[in-house]
Length: 301
Image (cartoon, rainbow, N blue to C red; front, side, top):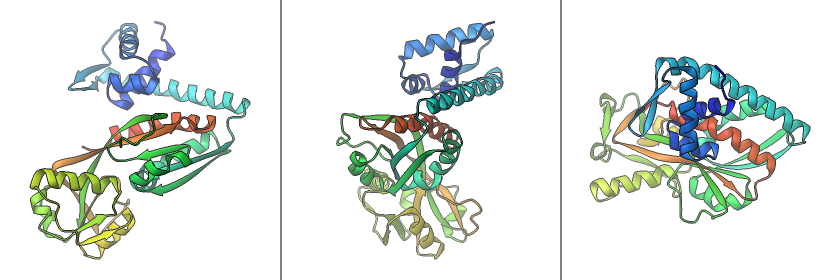
């Protein structure tokens, strides 16, 4: 049995992205090419590693065990590429990143720590703002991370990498009346004071559109605050219910809890890579995208 590294990398990307089409996009290959690599890999292994389920895939028992070895190969290749980049002078420089607040505060830190170990001399400067501001400022940055439907105003020279879907949840105090509900209907949510994010927030845009589509109107804005931290603190103080990303509640939080919304609300997260991005920024993007895709694809639904 002779394994092909490209087949292993495609298998890792299939697991991390959740579908053949997403893996093809992430690896910059056609779907038939990815499918052929995966077919040959399974023939080489001699057993099925995954099966299709809906639009995605589910690993078999053998696939779950095999994934650990394939992932180790990917990590070894990344380390080799990092060393090669060091020889070519690409391990030093600066990356300017504009990221929406949910990603900047909840998803990005762990990825930055991992990247720092591979490229300790690369400086990453993160500007945290809302999604609309990221779109507006992408010309001034090497990369952008947004958590909302893509705008038509995204420059044609800007490549978009889909990262996955984030789930929006209601956040409230542990003593709130709605805590008894496993999932909260929009019409019930609208009966209580709501704390809204500022205009331009991806969370607010999705919530407004959903309310209008489901109920025909947007509920009254009792309080509007800029930023996730301000919303969470207002909820702690008993000023109302907030609506945030599933990733926003701090670890060890004792006052607040979250509940799913009914119907569930999701929004896409995307990486924006403009044509003017530096070589070191592109290297960072190649590392960052699969890290965030893996986090989103393994999050609770």
